[in-house]
Length: 146
Image (cartoon, helix red, strand yellow):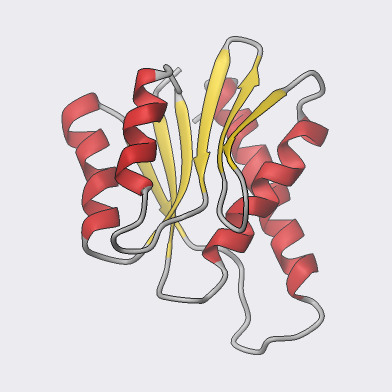
């Protein structure tokens, strides 16, 4: 299996962290027996999900000056083969993810979460769809399809 980062990029205050947290919530339902280890909890979470012998590091905090670079180091040290994180569109968070590709041969899938310019009641549903699609992507990575 190719080591992979799924980087969910976007500007400030558009819901990236909320979308990443939705992925944390949905993974156990897609992978019965998954072990979820919360390293940091709160509005932004740092989590390692273990599915069989596969470890997935997830960091929802991706703002400039955030703990993302530290989280990526922890995920490497803990042997995570898949990393899911929020990033901005440029700068330090993007550079931290790019370093995984340059220095540790991770493939990087850059994506954006599903969003609407309107803040409305459908936002939780939109995040749920995004999280479900990310769970399917994780399954394809684990199965070696991607």
